[in-house]
Structures are given as C-alpha cells and as structure tokens.
Length: 153
Image 1 (cartoon, helix red, strand yellow):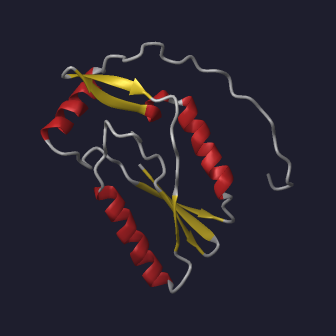
Image 2 (cartoon, one colour):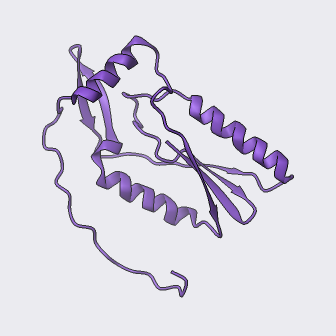
Image 3 (cartoon, one colour):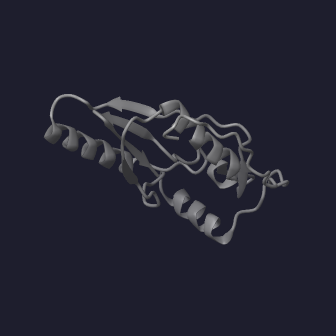
C-alpha cells in the first residue's frame, strides 16, 4: 500500500484432491503421450515477460508466488508412470527459487539484447512433466535500474 498499511486476511480453504494417484484427464494423457515420443519439449510452453516499474520487493513477490502455488494443485502436479500407466502426483511440498539477474549496467541497447537472449533461451528449455518442479511459474527476475522484468511460463 502507498501509505504503508498492511492487511492481514485469510484465504478460504480449498478442498484438496484425496486420491493418491488420480487418473489423467484426456488432455493430460495426450500431453504425456506426446512427451513420451521425444525427450522433453518446449512445444507446450507459453513464455511471457512483464516489465514492472518501481521498487520490487523480491521476498514479498516470492511469497505471493508460493501462496498461488500452494492454493492450486495443478501447479504442483507431476505426471508419473506406475507400471507403464501415467498418473498424476500432486506434490505437497515444493521448492520455489527465482533466478535473479542484475542487468543494470551497461547500456539500454545491450540490456534489451541480453533480456531478449535470456527470454529466448528460457523459451527453448524443455518442460519436464515428471520432474521435481513440474511448472516454472516464474523462472527469473531481471533488475534494470528502477524497473524489474519477470519471465514466466
């Protein structure tokens, strides 16, 4: 808040999935099948970049992302194979670590080029359906003077 006040509020509880290994939906099964044909792919990633102006409080930002991931099982869901059949595994615990890259020096043109290179590199990175970190809701932040950039998938 602009005047420095903070609000304490509690979000309502969301009912969790109770099955240990829920079956995949038709679309999840299709995605898993396509993933099995290759060795991972960036085909289904949708990279996005955002420019934030002003001071970014990294700790508060990370906590906001953690809260979103805690509330939405789909962001903690991996696809695992049990006896040849794919199932969902919803992780109870997760680790969120943002990669922070300082791009303040040297000049605007170089900074824009480096940001573009980093975004393209991230967009080519394969999405691992079975990996320990199923999604990458925010893979990196870049500090550029008084603004910050955020890339997410």
